[in-house]
Length: 386
Image (spheres, rainbow, N blue to C red):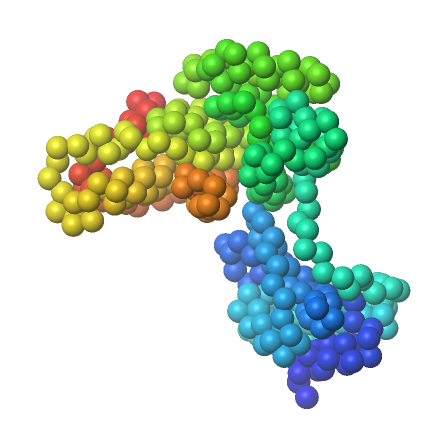
């Protein structure tokens, strides 16, 4: 019996003897992958024992449940393709298997970490990062009894999903002890208040959050609510995004800023050398207008609705490439479900240490612009001016 077979036998024995506590996968084979860890535990679903896998990505967690045989197959796959270390925790001992770069395995045994088993009930409720905070009442999301107002249920889900994403991003981003966050295009402030309250009162981080919003009535309203809630390091300013230039920005956020306002926000983040830039782009018009009147050979662009979607992707792809050109690692993913809004793409840039291949990135941008007849991308033009 080799080391891998021995390890899987230890798992099977611990489950049969009811001493299995949990199993953790760590040290990803490829550092570039978003999947950072996987955690296994026993759960009971409809009176049947299952193995629950929690897949921890950089921006969120995903949970899947498997019968024992399926769980073993999934675990084998993950150890072969994704992780170098697996640690089995039982009531008798801890067992770890480690694979070197050549795939050779070694096993170590240690005294048990746990003296009791984990609860076997399955928790269907995701962690609610926005729970009993006062701002939820003042912003009309909860009533005086603390219950979610039915028409605001989707907004409450959006807030919790947003905080889940931000929490994951901040944990994987090096930031100073005092974090200056600017939310450009903060609107009524739902997500701005949620972020401040969560980081300040739940994560106990030293944050200064500023919401930038052009509409003065919303700025006054949000500042009043911040005062009522005692949020001394949260403030709102009435100003155009392109004119804001007052402080160092560690984390720049721009959610659903219309058209080139997203580009203005990204530009401010780049000029401030922000550690983290988070955007949910909206109302992509500039690139489509730039290509107006230019004959398109691509048959997809013959139809208006497809043309609109194609140019949305072109706009955001060029934004991502420009972030990479300025030494950021980028990712694009779904922010919230399509059932709530089609404007659900989130673009994230995290400051990188590796220098970019500028010529190669410029070639990709030029190729995209040529293929779609784009004369100018607003953010690219702003950066070229500098």
